[in-house]
Image (tube, rainbow over all chains, first blue to last red):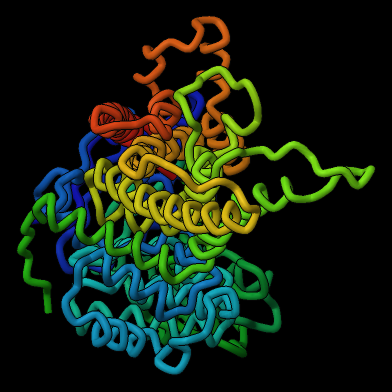
Length: 300
Length: 274
């Protein structure tokens, strides 16, 4: 069973399609990284899943049931755009409202539990408007975590956070998925961070899903390359191109793609009279892979 | 570890209980409700107090009311306004109430909390029913504080106190019953203008003044047919009320509440909510 299954979903605003015939499959238990440029339709898709927007056409199924099913929706937690809290109420009061909304039995304990997960036990009685951006995002996650959600939808939860805030948020997300085992749909621009936690990816462009793949598939598709530096970069590049078809200069390094054996490259360059000053073996990361896919699509 | 995947649909009672719980929690934990209760109590006391003040030449002005209970309800059901006393009674609660409902619902949207509600509540009628009931409760409480404020103000102003107690009770009950219909109307207006806070307040104020019915009365005359409208029935609950008045208010209030909830839910189901 899939946690989310979307077929032919479309949504337009004043004739412009924000989501256009989108298909999407999020397996149960996965951390699904939803990637796309600004305005590509990520937030619109998430709002459609949460029932905030009405689709023009298409089908959304959550855990095999229609997304309007009250039983499924009560187990969806979401953080979309902002935490959705009353600024003049305290963190505790905001969480209490959500706990009442979800008809939770042990409200106080539940609030303490989620505050502990997001590391905000000591900020319970602070007014929401007094919280920092990072704290507000964490409160939003705490709200989404109340009531044992089976599906968490997080829209850019790490945007605007400083390095430390990002680290805390990453740890929280890993903790949530490992300990509580819910399916997470997370959209983010910060692909380096997403790469550390996602098990599946979906790449959206102009409202259309252009690729869905698992982290394993991504790993298999990711190209290996060796990057190196020599005193005579132009000469070395010319020599390398004679043997390796995928050698090119990128910024201050020469990159030799799809070659895993660094010793072989060093030996070859020495034979040709070049001294290698720096060499390392790399793999294309999510960010570079994404840029590559996007540029391929751009060319088409 | 993967979550246990059981999806039990909550019953209507469970859903409404949760939504009502949130709305009542908000009502009692924010100053808005207390402020409007105070306004409802102070306004009639002030209106009565003004009538005791002398004019610019130091002469005593003509009292606005002749009886304490006219501050609560008009003597007769007059849809056409002859003088301000016919208008300035407990019906004013429905004007303040409209503003209170607009702020209450408007903050749902402004804060973004409505996203949490609509994410976990797939059934949009839950929202309409809950807001209507909670806002009706708030307006009933405002009617009570208005009654207290009006009575104290009237007694201090030295108005006459004679009244048919049964009619007074029927009038107050009738107006309290009408709170439900008014709350449904304001919830409906706020759902329609959910993206425009200012228009929500302005429209609530506009309808709350009953200007449309007053205008219709100017054309139709003091016709009882106007009782089919919220403002008409609110005026009908006056100091000559009887059991029939309560039945009339009940039918009109419930009918309009049902209409507004059904249409409002339909709009929420068919349109983007946030």
